[in-house]
Length: 167
Image 1 (cartoon, rainbow, N blue to C red):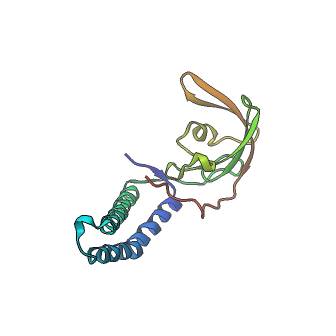
Image 2 (cartoon, helix red, strand yellow):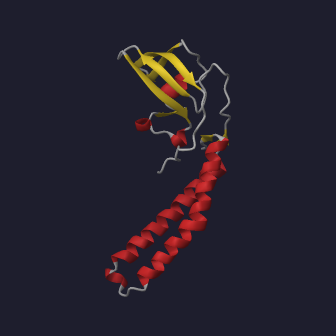
C-alpha cells in the first residue's frame, strides 16, 4: 500500500528525518547515558523515560522513512479555476445553512479540527476538480449524502506551518 503525497510532503518528511537523526538522536542517547549513570536501574524512572523517548524517536524515523520509500508522488497543480490540493475552499452547506472553509491536503497532513481536509475524505474527493458556483454532492456512505456549493477557491499555497501527522 502507498500514500499519495506531494513533493512538498516528502521534503517535509525528509527534513524531519534529518533533524531526528542528526539532532534528537544524539540528544536522546546522551539523556539515556546520564540517567544510566545515576545508579540502580530497577528504580530509575529517568532511565526508563529517557529510553522510551529514544525508542519513540527511532520508531518515528522508521515510520517516516517507510512513508517516503513507499509514497506515490502526486502533483499539487490544478487549473486556475478548479479546486486542487493545497487550495483553501469556502463552501456553503445547504442542509445546515452554514458556510465553512477548508484546506484540501494529502492524507498524511489531514486534521479536520484545524480545517485541513484530506483528498481521501468524502468532502475532499467531492470537491477536487470543481469550480466556484458548482453544486457538489458529498457521499458519506450509501445511506447518506449532502450537497454543498463552492463559494470561493483560494490558490495561495502556504503550507509552511503544516505538520506531518503523528501516528
